Amino acid sequence: MGTVAFLGPKGSFTEAAARAILPNETHKPYRSIPDCIDAVKENEVECAVVPLENAIEGSVNITLDYLIHHQRLEMVAEVTAPISQNLLVQNQHSENWEKVTTVYSHPQAIAQCHQFLRKYLPDAKVSLTSSTAEAAKLVSEMDKGISAAIANDISAKEYGLTIAKSNINDYENNRTRFIVLKSGNFNTGSFMRSNTESNYKTTLMITLPSDYSGALHQVLSAFAWRKINLSKIESRPMKTGLGNYFFIIDVDMKMDDILIPGVRDELKALGCGVEILGSYPCFQWEALTMNGSVK
Ligand SMILES: O=C(O)C(=O)C[C@]1(C(=O)O)C=C[C@@H](O)C=C1
Image 1 (cartoon, helix red, strand yellow):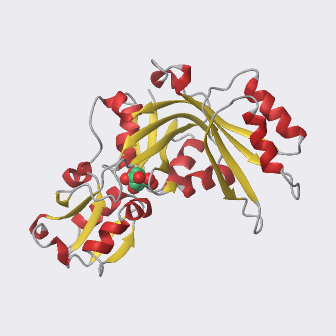
Image 2: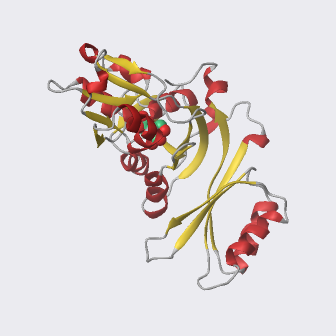
Image 3: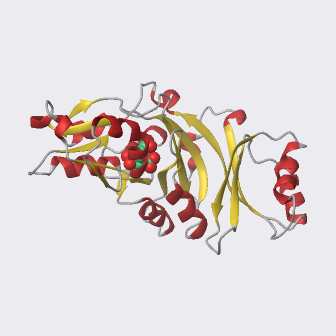
């Protein structure tokens, strides 16, 4: 048994993901994604579950940046969950939610509902919170004005709010990828069950040699001629100056003894920096929970 840090407070999407992938551990809320990561590094918990990427809004930059620039932890599993956002208000405002003056939520959730907000609440002020559940908690504690939170139905129950409008994300098929991070000897056996090697990803961080024309092309060709499928490539600033970027590349295979080491050696010979951030099984929420979406 271990303790799992998650982006809290209780009721967040991240908590639901953490409970789905690590059902038998103890779950502990933290205020921010960096706090979850630090908790692992400082051995307060054995691992952390944090959001990494959303189908509508893209990467959760704070997760990637904190992992790369501050605390390197190993990625040991991922779970992809359907996300349904709702507009939550205090019960007495459920009939006049269109008079809401402030909408609270996490920036990723606000971004997933931009069109909804433009159309139905164009004059409402948007106020950012550390998570969707934090927004719901805040709104439940307000004693003046009419405010709303964008959050899931678990938060509605947890904080005694009413769902004024359900499923308000601008696009269907809204899903978020959550990643499990660990350091040290935490035994990840509990979620390794029944996962085939084809449901694996390996995430690499690659830096290019400076002023080397065609470098990215050569990086990609090291994967291409080995017929390694990439499921994501993303550049993020190195934070050392304009124009300096590193690349995060996800490949659809488990770390092996030949192909990925071959890529690594070929790229190193070109002068690239290569680090493997993890090689991990990938789970779908539906398979873990036999359940519908987190609304
Ligand atoms: O877990 C939560 O409730 C969060 O607020 C985080 C987060 C995210 O950063 O992606 C999680 C899932 C949703 O995509 C929206 C927000």
